[in-house]
Image: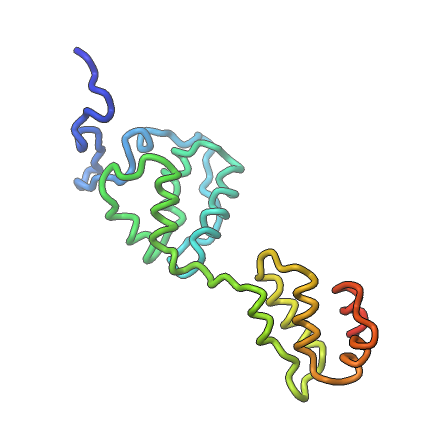
Length: 191
């Protein structure tokens, strides 16, 4: 008797049920994958849907890569990294709908995309100003913190926004007379 090809099989004939009758969202191949005998689950914060899903995936993969590169194990262990809303999302996924970690990752990131932080651009720096009556140090700290969250920020752009955010005074006058050569030069002169 010839074994039917995967695409010819009845969609539910290869699904595994637990004793309670629950059908798992993973394919039979994933469910049949055994964890190594010395397996320890990764120790990372469980994702609850309130933070960046891409960051969770990156942390998850980083942890699992210490023990395996088997994508079926990545799938099988993934539900243990979820709690709350994310676990509630995962549990009722259609039976057999997860056939690879790529599929699982795409579904997870799409479902929780609204939890991604808003991407900041250099224009955000326009609103950071040295407040009247405030010293330079808190302004520099706040400005520096925001620049860390802007991908691809050119130092020249950061420097221009920093200078325009300064309160008029001796430092601004000095910078107008002799423009800083670099961001480090500007920081040194601001001290």
